[in-house]
Amino acid sequence: MKLAFVVQRYGLDINGGAELHCRWVAEHLKKFCDIEVLTTRAFDYVTWKDHFPQGEESINGIRVKRFSVNRPRNPERFGKIQDLIVDHEHKEIDELRWIEEEGPLSSSLIHHIKEHESDYDYFIFFSYRYYHSYWGIQTVPHKSILVPTAEHDAVIHLKIFKELFRKPLAFVFNSVEERKMIQALSQNENVMGDVVGVGTVVPKEFKTEEFRKKHQIPGPYVIYVGRIDENKGCDELFDFFLRFKKESDTDVKLVLVGNTKLKIPSHLDIIYLGFTSEEEKFSALNGAEFLIMPSFFESLSMVTLEAWAMEKPVLANARCRVLKGQCLRSNAGLFYENFGEFSLAFHLLLFSERLRKILGANGLQYFNQNYTWDVIEKKYLSLLDRLQQRTA
Amino acid sequence: MNKKMDKKDGQFDPETIRIDYDHLDVADIMDQIKKKTDAQRMDDFPVLVSEEDVLPDSSLNASEFEENGPGSSKAKKILLKLMRPFSPIIKLLVLPVHQELRETIQTLDRTNKRLDLLSDYLNGALDEVKTNLGQFNSETNKRVDLAFEDLTRAKEYAKLLHNLSHNIVVEMTKLKIEEENLKIRIRILEKDFEHLKSREKALESRMS
Image 1 (spheres, rainbow over the protein chains, first blue to last red):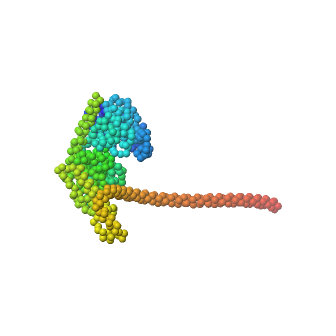
Image 2 (image 1 turned 135 degrees about the vertical axis):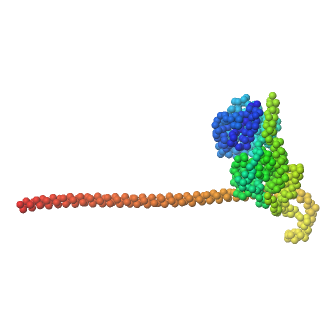
């Protein structure tokens, strides 16, 4: 079976959620199928400017075909049209203009899909909101599988997506909540789809003591891993954490790992490490009492799965339906909607080692049942088998 | 780990959350947390709007009411007496609105806090901009002053050079005139000399 993975960017240095998701799935399915990645030459997700050389290359044993973008994205023009379609009355043509501006606008990629449709059994499109998925699915709907990686943001309500979600042959969802949301928006219950997600591998050994010494964190700490951004709920996290510190007499610290777009409050108990290596990230996570995931928009949250794989409980933002759902299904995390709930849940997790242990064990069990690569591979293969049986 | 939590006024007590560790259920823990925070919010609210502000207090007797305000009248007393049996129903009817009010006030409170944070952040940013602008301004002023000094100096030099040139021209003109005068005097002296020579010759011839 020959599969084409179609994604906006692809490369070893590209760490965006959907792109990494695509690469990992491709690398794990290559032992079962002939896989080719169709992508653009872009590296920068803001402009989509051509960066990689055109043509073919092999990355970790996967054949990657890159196509040029017609023109880089103009953030100013994109901002204007995004404002129009999100906040104002508009027509469908505006939404189509938006998808063109959203990019990466690569007509050669779409042309290739059209020309070589018969070379592939299925096309797996990653991220519904980009040009390649929208026009790719329109080009080969009967061979399309969409991995939407959708969040509950404003653009998902666009009319063009309502129609798009009815077109593919099948869906691979990241979570039950994502499936519910997409089905509620487009009434596409007749389209086949499984909740699969993505697996992860956690190292067996950690250098936690080394990490503590390096950053001079001898005491207890909680951790946030990810982009430090308002959309990720980090400003609220700082507010809640500092209020909690003020009201309680604890020496707990908040460790932040990831690139920041926010001004981090200067406080002795908030330690910002910036972007770290994977090894250091896992060492930091291993030493933490629990992970805080304050994000409002997540389609899966890989770091939450990593925390569970390491038997660490999670304190999540309940306003993100996916995170709340995952916590309830796994029985491995608490969640909050306001400061009162944050404070109580934080207190329970911080001071009850027994609770942390049980939640952590539940997390590991949930991870093993749903997110090891064996499970993920089986789910993909089962979906592909069913599709083949249906078309046979 | 320092694990004491201050029991300040209006603070939650996590000890009251019952956890069945043998059959841990996150949903149950979250229900308890929710109930506790909701109850806490209800307790906090009377600071802003108390039930007493909305409903007549049935525990107060008529004399207390009389003492409470000069406006209390007999009719008021009768009305309160009449209303007393209906107090639970009134409370029931009023509470949902009350609840909404509480939530609205909490939302407003949260918004205010966010606005305060934003305002602090903006003020900080504004101060930073002001400091930077001040520094830039003083540096620019210094540079302008220096440039102005250079310019004034150059202007003085130019003036001096102009005067010097003028003086040189005057002096050279004077020297030229002097030279002409001297030349004329030389010519006169030459003529005198020639005249004397011819006179000398004439005298010599007469003597001989």
